[in-house]
Amino acid sequence: MVYLGRTKKKVNMPVSHKGDIQIENILTSKTKALKINLNKNIYGTFAEIGAGQETVRQFFRAGGSSGTIAKAMSAYDKDFSDAIYGMESDKRYVTESRLKKMLRHEIQLIESRLDRRKHPDKMYFSYANTVCTIDFAKQFKGHGWVGIQFQLSPHEPYNEIVLHLRFKQTDATLQQETLGKLGVNLIYGAFYNNDNPKDLILSLYDNIEKDELEIDMINFSGPRFTYVDNRLMSLQLVKNGMTNAVMFNDSGKNLLPAQELYKKNILALRGRFRPVTRINMDVYEESKKLFHENPKVDPKNTRTIFEITLSNLKNEGQINERDFLDRADLLCSLGQMVMITNFQEYYKLADYFGEFTHKQICFAMGVDSIMNIFDIKYYHHLKGNILEGVGKLFSNNLIIYLYPILDKDGKTIINSNNLKVNHRVKELYKYFKQTNKVIDIPNYNVEYMDIQGPDVYKKIGTNEDGWEDMLPEGIAETIKFKGLFGYKKQING
Image (cartoon, rainbow, N blue to C red; front, side, top):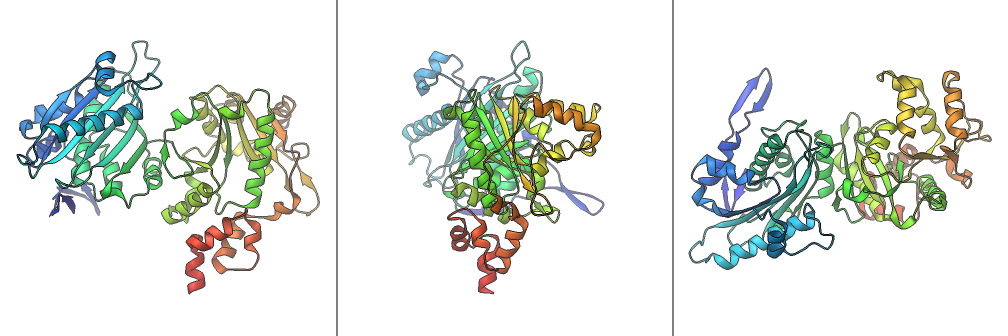
Protein backbone atom coordinates (compact mmCIF):
# COMPACT_ATOMS: atom_id res chain seq x y z
CA MET A 1 0.00 0.00 0.00
CA VAL A 2 1.26 3.47 -0.90
CA TYR A 3 -0.10 6.58 0.75
CA LEU A 4 -0.70 9.74 -1.23
CA GLY A 5 -1.99 12.52 0.99
CA ARG A 6 -4.48 11.07 3.45
CA THR A 7 -5.95 8.62 0.96
CA LYS A 8 -4.82 5.04 0.56
CA LYS A 9 -4.16 4.14 -3.04
CA LYS A 10 -3.04 0.68 -3.96
CA VAL A 11 -0.48 0.47 -6.71
CA ASN A 12 -1.05 -2.66 -8.79
CA MET A 13 2.28 -3.87 -10.12
CA PRO A 14 2.41 -6.36 -13.01
CA VAL A 15 3.89 -9.69 -12.00
CA SER A 16 5.57 -12.39 -14.05
CA HIS A 17 6.34 -15.93 -12.94
CA LYS A 18 9.54 -17.91 -13.33
CA GLY A 19 9.13 -21.32 -11.76
CA ASP A 20 8.11 -20.78 -8.16
CA ILE A 21 9.58 -17.25 -8.02
CA GLN A 22 7.42 -14.17 -8.47
CA ILE A 23 9.25 -11.34 -10.23
CA GLU A 24 7.83 -7.84 -10.49
CA ASN A 25 8.08 -6.32 -13.94
CA ILE A 26 10.08 -3.14 -13.55
CA LEU A 27 8.30 -0.06 -14.84
CA THR A 28 10.19 1.88 -17.50
CA SER A 29 11.38 5.41 -16.79
CA LYS A 30 8.79 6.72 -19.24
CA THR A 31 5.96 4.83 -17.51
CA LYS A 32 7.03 6.14 -14.11
CA ALA A 33 7.32 9.73 -15.36
CA LEU A 34 3.93 9.50 -17.07
CA LYS A 35 2.29 8.14 -13.90
CA ILE A 36 3.65 11.14 -11.99
CA ASN A 37 2.53 13.53 -14.74
CA LEU A 38 -1.00 12.14 -14.74
CA ASN A 39 -1.36 12.53 -10.97
CA LYS A 40 -3.08 15.90 -10.74
CA ASN A 41 -1.97 16.45 -7.14
CA ILE A 42 1.82 16.21 -7.65
CA TYR A 43 3.39 19.55 -8.60
CA GLY A 44 6.90 20.92 -8.24
CA THR A 45 10.20 22.18 -9.57
CA PHE A 46 13.40 20.73 -11.00
CA ALA A 47 16.78 22.34 -10.41
CA GLU A 48 19.75 20.50 -11.93
CA ILE A 49 23.38 21.60 -11.99
CA GLY A 50 26.35 20.11 -13.81
CA ALA A 51 25.05 17.35 -16.06
CA GLY A 52 22.22 19.04 -17.94
CA GLN A 53 18.51 18.78 -17.22
CA GLU A 54 18.49 15.03 -17.53
CA THR A 55 15.74 14.20 -15.04
CA VAL A 56 13.19 16.78 -16.10
CA ARG A 57 13.76 15.77 -19.72
CA GLN A 58 12.27 12.37 -18.88
CA PHE A 59 9.08 14.07 -17.69
CA PHE A 60 8.83 16.37 -20.71
CA ARG A 61 9.24 13.42 -23.08
CA ALA A 62 6.69 11.25 -21.25
CA GLY A 63 3.86 13.71 -21.99
CA GLY A 64 1.39 15.54 -19.78
CA SER A 65 4.18 17.35 -17.95
CA SER A 66 2.31 20.66 -17.61
CA GLY A 67 0.45 19.21 -14.67
CA THR A 68 3.66 18.30 -12.86
CA ILE A 69 6.37 20.82 -13.71
CA ALA A 70 6.02 24.27 -12.23
CA LYS A 71 9.59 25.23 -13.19
CA ALA A 72 12.72 23.62 -14.60
CA MET A 73 16.11 25.29 -14.44
CA SER A 74 19.85 24.73 -14.59
CA ALA A 75 22.03 27.42 -13.01
CA TYR A 76 25.05 26.06 -14.86
CA ASP A 77 27.23 29.16 -14.59
CA LYS A 78 28.85 29.39 -11.15
CA ASP A 79 28.14 33.09 -10.76
CA PHE A 80 24.49 32.54 -11.57
CA SER A 81 24.39 29.63 -9.15
CA ASP A 82 25.98 31.70 -6.36
CA ALA A 83 23.56 34.57 -7.03
CA ILE A 84 20.61 32.21 -6.60
CA TYR A 85 21.75 29.89 -3.81
CA GLY A 86 24.65 31.73 -2.21
CA MET A 87 28.32 30.76 -2.10
CA GLU A 88 29.54 27.75 -0.15
CA SER A 89 32.19 28.36 2.50
CA ASP A 90 34.52 25.92 0.73
CA LYS A 91 33.58 27.36 -2.70
CA ARG A 92 32.59 23.90 -3.93
CA TYR A 93 29.42 23.12 -5.84
CA VAL A 94 29.01 19.35 -5.80
CA THR A 95 28.30 19.03 -2.09
CA GLU A 96 25.49 17.99 0.21
CA SER A 97 25.16 21.50 1.63
CA ARG A 98 24.75 22.88 -1.90
CA LEU A 99 22.05 20.37 -2.69
CA LYS A 100 20.12 21.17 0.48
CA LYS A 101 20.32 24.90 -0.23
CA MET A 102 18.86 24.22 -3.66
CA LEU A 103 16.02 22.15 -2.23
CA ARG A 104 15.14 24.69 0.46
CA HIS A 105 15.34 27.65 -1.90
CA GLU A 106 13.08 26.08 -4.51
CA ILE A 107 10.50 24.96 -1.95
CA GLN A 108 10.37 28.50 -0.54
CA LEU A 109 9.75 29.83 -4.04
CA ILE A 110 6.92 27.36 -4.61
CA GLU A 111 5.26 28.33 -1.35
CA SER A 112 5.65 32.05 -1.98
CA ARG A 113 4.65 32.10 -5.66
CA LEU A 114 1.81 29.59 -5.76
CA ASP A 115 -1.45 30.49 -4.07
CA ARG A 116 -2.75 27.63 -1.94
CA ARG A 117 -6.29 28.83 -2.60
CA LYS A 118 -5.66 28.13 -6.27
CA HIS A 119 -3.97 24.80 -5.58
CA PRO A 120 -5.71 23.42 -2.46
CA ASP A 121 -4.97 19.77 -3.25
CA LYS A 122 -1.43 20.08 -4.61
CA MET A 123 1.41 18.18 -2.96
CA TYR A 124 4.47 20.28 -3.73
CA PHE A 125 7.94 18.89 -4.33
CA SER A 126 11.38 20.15 -5.23
CA TYR A 127 13.83 17.84 -6.97
CA ALA A 128 17.49 18.86 -7.29
CA ASN A 129 20.86 17.47 -8.24
CA THR A 130 24.36 18.89 -8.37
CA VAL A 131 26.67 16.63 -10.36
CA CYS A 132 30.01 16.47 -12.11
CA THR A 133 30.37 13.89 -14.87
CA ILE A 134 33.57 12.30 -16.15
CA ASP A 135 36.34 14.70 -17.16
CA PHE A 136 37.87 14.82 -20.66
CA ALA A 137 41.02 13.02 -19.48
CA LYS A 138 38.77 10.27 -18.05
CA GLN A 139 40.75 10.27 -14.80
CA PHE A 140 37.81 11.13 -12.56
CA LYS A 141 34.56 9.33 -13.33
CA GLY A 142 32.44 11.88 -11.53
CA HIS A 143 29.96 11.94 -8.67
CA GLY A 144 27.00 13.92 -7.43
CA TRP A 145 24.29 14.67 -4.91
CA VAL A 146 20.62 14.04 -5.66
CA GLY A 147 17.62 14.83 -3.48
CA ILE A 148 13.95 15.59 -3.17
CA GLN A 149 11.77 17.45 -0.69
CA PHE A 150 8.12 16.51 -0.99
CA GLN A 151 4.73 16.51 0.65
CA LEU A 152 2.34 13.60 0.95
CA SER A 153 -0.51 15.84 2.04
CA PRO A 154 -1.08 19.50 0.98
CA HIS A 155 -0.62 20.97 4.45
CA GLU A 156 1.94 18.49 5.78
CA PRO A 157 5.57 19.46 6.50
CA TYR A 158 8.08 18.33 3.89
CA ASN A 159 9.88 15.02 3.81
CA GLU A 160 13.38 14.71 2.39
CA ILE A 161 15.50 12.03 0.74
CA VAL A 162 19.14 12.83 -0.06
CA LEU A 163 21.68 10.49 -1.64
CA HIS A 164 25.20 10.53 -3.03
CA LEU A 165 26.24 8.71 -6.18
CA ARG A 166 29.46 7.77 -7.90
CA PHE A 167 29.47 7.12 -11.63
CA LYS A 168 31.09 3.96 -12.95
CA GLN A 169 30.55 4.55 -16.66
CA THR A 170 33.34 6.10 -18.74
CA ASP A 171 31.16 8.12 -21.11
CA ALA A 172 29.57 11.45 -20.13
CA THR A 173 26.47 10.92 -22.26
CA LEU A 174 25.80 7.55 -20.66
CA GLN A 175 26.30 9.07 -17.22
CA GLN A 176 23.74 11.77 -18.04
CA GLU A 177 21.22 9.17 -19.13
CA THR A 178 21.81 7.16 -15.95
CA LEU A 179 21.33 10.28 -13.85
CA GLY A 180 18.00 10.96 -15.57
CA LYS A 181 16.76 7.44 -14.80
CA LEU A 182 17.90 7.71 -11.20
CA GLY A 183 16.04 11.00 -10.79
CA VAL A 184 12.82 9.49 -12.11
CA ASN A 185 13.22 6.49 -9.78
CA LEU A 186 13.76 8.77 -6.79
CA ILE A 187 10.73 10.98 -7.50
CA TYR A 188 8.51 7.97 -8.21
CA GLY A 189 9.77 6.20 -5.10
CA ALA A 190 9.14 9.26 -2.94
CA PHE A 191 5.47 9.32 -3.87
CA TYR A 192 4.70 5.64 -4.44
CA ASN A 193 7.14 3.68 -2.24
CA ASN A 194 7.45 6.01 0.74
CA ASP A 195 5.83 3.52 3.12
CA ASN A 196 8.65 1.02 2.53
CA PRO A 197 12.08 2.68 2.35
CA LYS A 198 13.82 -0.66 1.71
CA ASP A 199 11.76 -1.16 -1.45
CA LEU A 200 12.37 2.47 -2.35
CA ILE A 201 16.12 1.92 -2.14
CA LEU A 202 15.90 -1.17 -4.35
CA SER A 203 13.78 0.73 -6.88
CA LEU A 204 16.51 3.34 -7.34
CA TYR A 205 18.23 0.83 -9.63
CA ASP A 206 15.19 0.22 -11.81
CA ASN A 207 16.43 0.31 -15.43
CA ILE A 208 20.00 0.87 -14.12
CA GLU A 209 22.73 -1.76 -13.81
CA LYS A 210 24.91 -2.01 -10.70
CA ASP A 211 28.05 -1.54 -12.84
CA GLU A 212 26.74 1.83 -14.06
CA LEU A 213 26.22 3.57 -10.75
CA GLU A 214 27.17 3.36 -7.08
CA ILE A 215 25.02 4.84 -4.32
CA ASP A 216 27.17 5.14 -1.21
CA MET A 217 25.03 7.29 1.10
CA ILE A 218 21.34 7.93 1.66
CA ASN A 219 19.38 9.75 4.38
CA PHE A 220 15.64 9.92 4.99
CA SER A 221 14.04 12.65 7.11
CA GLY A 222 10.66 14.27 7.68
CA PRO A 223 7.32 13.35 9.30
CA ARG A 224 6.75 10.25 7.15
CA PHE A 225 10.21 8.88 7.97
CA THR A 226 10.33 9.42 11.74
CA TYR A 227 10.37 5.63 12.16
CA VAL A 228 13.34 5.17 9.80
CA ASP A 229 16.76 4.41 11.26
CA ASN A 230 19.16 5.67 8.62
CA ARG A 231 21.83 3.25 9.81
CA LEU A 232 19.61 0.44 8.58
CA MET A 233 19.25 2.23 5.28
CA SER A 234 23.05 2.33 5.03
CA LEU A 235 23.13 -1.38 5.72
CA GLN A 236 20.72 -1.93 2.82
CA LEU A 237 23.14 -0.23 0.41
CA VAL A 238 25.91 -2.71 1.27
CA LYS A 239 23.60 -5.69 1.59
CA ASN A 240 22.12 -5.04 -1.88
CA GLY A 241 25.51 -4.57 -3.53
CA MET A 242 24.94 -0.88 -4.26
CA THR A 243 28.20 0.06 -2.55
CA ASN A 244 31.04 -1.66 -0.69
CA ALA A 245 31.20 0.59 2.37
CA VAL A 246 29.02 2.94 4.40
CA MET A 247 29.67 5.02 7.50
CA PHE A 248 27.73 6.65 10.31
CA ASN A 249 28.79 8.76 13.27
CA ASP A 250 28.08 8.47 16.99
CA SER A 251 24.71 10.19 16.58
CA GLY A 252 23.62 7.67 13.95
CA LYS A 253 23.85 10.07 11.01
CA ASN A 254 24.98 8.53 7.75
CA LEU A 255 28.23 9.95 6.41
CA LEU A 256 29.87 10.01 3.00
CA PRO A 257 33.08 7.91 3.28
CA ALA A 258 34.87 9.86 0.53
CA GLN A 259 34.24 13.10 2.38
CA GLU A 260 35.15 11.82 5.83
CA LEU A 261 38.33 10.01 4.75
CA TYR A 262 39.67 12.51 2.23
CA LYS A 263 43.35 13.22 3.00
CA LYS A 264 42.94 11.85 6.53
CA ASN A 265 45.13 9.59 8.66
CA ILE A 266 43.05 6.47 9.32
CA LEU A 267 43.11 4.10 12.29
CA ALA A 268 40.76 1.13 11.76
CA LEU A 269 39.72 -1.69 14.09
CA ARG A 270 37.83 -4.67 12.70
CA GLY A 271 35.61 -6.87 14.82
CA ARG A 272 32.20 -8.37 15.44
CA PHE A 273 31.66 -6.11 18.49
CA ARG A 274 28.84 -8.39 19.67
CA PRO A 275 29.15 -6.76 22.14
CA VAL A 276 32.12 -4.40 22.31
CA THR A 277 34.34 -5.66 25.18
CA ARG A 278 37.13 -4.41 27.40
CA ILE A 279 39.77 -5.99 25.18
CA ASN A 280 38.29 -4.24 22.11
CA MET A 281 38.61 -0.89 23.83
CA ASP A 282 42.08 -1.67 25.16
CA VAL A 283 43.24 -2.39 21.60
CA TYR A 284 41.65 0.90 20.56
CA GLU A 285 43.14 3.03 23.34
CA GLU A 286 46.66 1.62 23.10
CA SER A 287 46.80 1.67 19.29
CA LYS A 288 45.54 5.24 19.28
CA LYS A 289 48.41 6.27 21.56
CA LEU A 290 50.94 4.71 19.18
CA PHE A 291 49.21 6.24 16.17
CA HIS A 292 49.29 9.75 17.60
CA GLU A 293 52.95 9.35 18.55
CA ASN A 294 53.82 8.66 14.90
CA PRO A 295 55.58 11.82 13.60
CA LYS A 296 53.75 11.43 10.26
CA VAL A 297 50.33 11.60 11.94
CA ASP A 298 48.49 14.78 12.83
CA PRO A 299 45.96 13.79 15.54
CA LYS A 300 43.67 16.62 14.41
CA ASN A 301 43.56 15.16 10.90
CA THR A 302 42.71 11.60 11.91
CA ARG A 303 39.67 9.36 11.61
CA THR A 304 39.26 6.35 13.89
CA ILE A 305 36.89 3.71 12.55
CA PHE A 306 35.29 0.64 14.08
CA GLU A 307 34.70 -1.57 11.04
CA ILE A 308 32.30 -4.50 10.79
CA THR A 309 32.27 -6.65 7.67
CA LEU A 310 29.01 -7.85 6.18
CA SER A 311 30.07 -11.44 6.90
CA ASN A 312 30.57 -10.56 10.58
CA LEU A 313 26.98 -9.29 10.71
CA LYS A 314 25.57 -12.58 9.51
CA ASN A 315 24.33 -14.94 12.16
CA GLU A 316 23.11 -18.34 11.00
CA GLY A 317 23.50 -17.25 7.38
CA GLN A 318 21.48 -14.04 7.47
CA ILE A 319 21.68 -10.51 8.84
CA ASN A 320 19.67 -9.81 11.98
CA GLU A 321 18.87 -6.09 11.81
CA ARG A 322 18.04 -5.81 15.50
CA ASP A 323 21.37 -7.43 16.36
CA PHE A 324 23.13 -4.98 14.01
CA LEU A 325 21.48 -1.99 15.71
CA ASP A 326 22.40 -3.34 19.15
CA ARG A 327 26.07 -3.39 18.16
CA ALA A 328 25.80 0.03 16.54
CA ASP A 329 24.09 1.52 19.60
CA LEU A 330 26.91 0.41 21.87
CA LEU A 331 29.68 1.71 19.60
CA CYS A 332 27.83 4.99 19.13
CA SER A 333 27.39 5.33 22.91
CA LEU A 334 31.19 5.17 23.14
CA GLY A 335 31.46 8.05 20.67
CA GLN A 336 32.81 5.92 17.83
CA MET A 337 32.48 6.19 14.06
CA VAL A 338 31.24 2.94 12.52
CA MET A 339 31.84 1.53 9.04
CA ILE A 340 30.07 -1.43 7.46
CA THR A 341 31.95 -2.98 4.53
CA ASN A 342 31.85 -5.82 2.07
CA PHE A 343 35.65 -6.25 2.27
CA GLN A 344 36.36 -9.61 3.83
CA GLU A 345 40.07 -9.37 2.95
CA TYR A 346 42.14 -6.71 4.67
CA TYR A 347 43.97 -5.76 1.48
CA LYS A 348 40.67 -4.74 -0.12
CA LEU A 349 39.90 -2.48 2.83
CA ALA A 350 43.38 -0.92 2.58
CA ASP A 351 42.88 -0.40 -1.15
CA TYR A 352 39.53 1.29 -0.48
CA PHE A 353 41.08 3.70 2.03
CA GLY A 354 43.84 4.39 -0.49
CA GLU A 355 41.24 5.82 -2.90
CA PHE A 356 40.74 8.77 -0.57
CA THR A 357 44.03 9.36 1.22
CA HIS A 358 47.79 9.00 0.90
CA LYS A 359 48.26 9.71 4.60
CA GLN A 360 49.14 7.10 7.21
CA ILE A 361 46.78 4.13 7.46
CA CYS A 362 46.85 1.75 10.41
CA PHE A 363 45.01 -1.46 11.21
CA ALA A 364 44.92 -2.45 14.89
CA MET A 365 44.36 -6.16 15.39
CA GLY A 366 45.12 -9.21 17.47
CA VAL A 367 47.77 -11.82 16.68
CA ASP A 368 45.15 -14.27 15.45
CA SER A 369 44.12 -11.80 12.71
CA ILE A 370 47.63 -11.26 11.37
CA MET A 371 48.15 -15.02 11.29
CA ASN A 372 45.13 -15.17 8.95
CA ILE A 373 46.66 -12.40 6.82
CA PHE A 374 49.78 -14.54 6.31
CA ASP A 375 47.82 -17.75 5.72
CA ILE A 376 48.27 -18.83 2.09
CA LYS A 377 44.85 -20.52 1.88
CA TYR A 378 43.13 -17.13 1.71
CA TYR A 379 44.87 -16.09 -1.52
CA HIS A 380 44.27 -18.94 -3.97
CA HIS A 381 41.88 -16.71 -5.98
CA LEU A 382 44.69 -14.25 -6.79
CA LYS A 383 47.11 -14.86 -9.65
CA GLY A 384 50.01 -13.78 -7.50
CA ASN A 385 48.69 -15.72 -4.50
CA ILE A 386 49.76 -14.45 -1.07
CA LEU A 387 52.54 -12.28 -2.51
CA GLU A 388 49.98 -10.27 -4.45
CA GLY A 389 47.52 -9.97 -1.55
CA VAL A 390 50.05 -8.96 1.09
CA GLY A 391 51.78 -6.66 -1.39
CA LYS A 392 48.50 -4.83 -1.99
CA LEU A 393 47.88 -4.62 1.74
CA PHE A 394 51.15 -2.91 2.59
CA SER A 395 51.41 -0.81 -0.57
CA ASN A 396 49.01 1.80 0.81
CA ASN A 397 51.30 3.36 3.43
CA LEU A 398 49.93 0.88 5.94
CA ILE A 399 51.12 -0.19 9.39
CA ILE A 400 49.71 -2.96 11.56
CA TYR A 401 49.60 -2.44 15.32
CA LEU A 402 49.54 -5.87 16.94
CA TYR A 403 47.85 -6.70 20.24
CA PRO A 404 49.26 -9.93 21.74
CA ILE A 405 47.25 -12.99 22.72
CA LEU A 406 47.64 -15.59 25.41
CA ASP A 407 48.80 -19.03 24.30
CA LYS A 408 46.74 -22.13 25.07
CA ASP A 409 49.00 -22.87 28.02
CA GLY A 410 47.64 -19.76 29.71
CA LYS A 411 51.14 -18.42 30.38
CA THR A 412 52.96 -17.56 27.15
CA ILE A 413 52.31 -14.18 25.52
CA ILE A 414 52.34 -14.44 21.73
CA ASN A 415 53.34 -11.30 19.84
CA SER A 416 55.00 -10.45 16.52
CA ASN A 417 58.28 -11.99 17.61
CA ASN A 418 57.14 -15.51 18.41
CA LEU A 419 53.97 -16.02 16.39
CA LYS A 420 54.13 -18.97 14.01
CA VAL A 421 53.40 -18.59 10.31
CA ASN A 422 53.67 -21.13 7.50
CA HIS A 423 57.31 -21.84 6.63
CA ARG A 424 56.58 -20.84 3.01
CA VAL A 425 55.80 -17.24 4.03
CA LYS A 426 58.19 -16.96 6.98
CA GLU A 427 60.69 -14.77 5.12
CA LEU A 428 57.90 -12.62 3.69
CA TYR A 429 56.53 -11.99 7.17
CA LYS A 430 60.03 -11.29 8.48
CA TYR A 431 60.54 -8.64 5.79
CA PHE A 432 57.46 -6.65 6.82
CA LYS A 433 58.35 -7.06 10.46
CA GLN A 434 61.88 -5.75 9.91
CA THR A 435 60.64 -2.77 7.89
CA ASN A 436 58.38 -1.71 10.79
CA LYS A 437 55.17 -2.52 8.95
CA VAL A 438 54.16 -4.74 11.89
CA ILE A 439 54.56 -3.14 15.33
CA ASP A 440 53.69 -4.65 18.70
CA ILE A 441 51.44 -2.74 21.09
CA PRO A 442 53.70 -2.64 24.17
CA ASN A 443 51.07 -1.89 26.80
CA TYR A 444 48.40 -4.54 27.16
CA ASN A 445 46.27 -6.09 29.87
CA VAL A 446 46.70 -9.82 30.37
CA GLU A 447 43.46 -9.98 32.37
CA TYR A 448 41.48 -8.98 29.27
CA MET A 449 42.93 -11.71 27.04
CA ASP A 450 40.46 -14.33 28.22
CA ILE A 451 37.48 -12.18 27.23
CA GLN A 452 35.75 -13.62 24.18
CA GLY A 453 32.83 -11.81 22.55
CA PRO A 454 30.71 -14.94 21.87
CA ASP A 455 31.06 -16.02 25.53
CA VAL A 456 29.99 -12.58 26.74
CA TYR A 457 27.04 -12.58 24.35
CA LYS A 458 25.90 -15.97 25.64
CA LYS A 459 26.20 -14.85 29.25
CA ILE A 460 24.08 -11.75 28.53
CA GLY A 461 21.36 -13.93 27.06
CA THR A 462 21.31 -16.28 30.09
CA ASN A 463 21.96 -13.44 32.56
CA GLU A 464 24.93 -15.30 33.97
CA ASP A 465 26.85 -13.52 36.73
CA GLY A 466 29.98 -11.59 35.85
CA TRP A 467 29.40 -10.53 32.24
CA GLU A 468 29.19 -6.89 33.22
CA ASP A 469 32.86 -6.87 34.29
CA MET A 470 33.93 -7.91 30.78
CA LEU A 471 32.56 -4.75 29.19
CA PRO A 472 33.77 -1.13 29.09
CA GLU A 473 32.39 1.24 31.68
CA GLY A 474 28.74 2.12 31.11
CA ILE A 475 28.13 -0.55 28.45
CA ALA A 476 26.46 -3.05 30.77
CA GLU A 477 24.08 -0.35 31.98
CA THR A 478 23.20 0.52 28.37
CA ILE A 479 22.53 -3.14 27.54
CA LYS A 480 20.24 -3.50 30.54
CA PHE A 481 18.42 -0.21 29.99
CA LYS A 482 17.76 -0.81 26.28
CA GLY A 483 17.36 -4.58 26.55
CA LEU A 484 20.07 -5.23 23.97
CA PHE A 485 21.12 -8.71 22.80
CA GLY A 486 17.97 -10.25 24.32
CA TYR A 487 18.80 -9.23 27.89
CA LYS A 488 15.42 -7.75 28.84
CA LYS A 489 13.50 -10.53 27.11
CA GLN A 490 15.45 -13.10 29.08
CA ILE A 491 14.92 -11.59 32.54
CA ASN A 492 11.24 -10.98 31.88
CA GLY A 493 10.76 -14.54 30.73
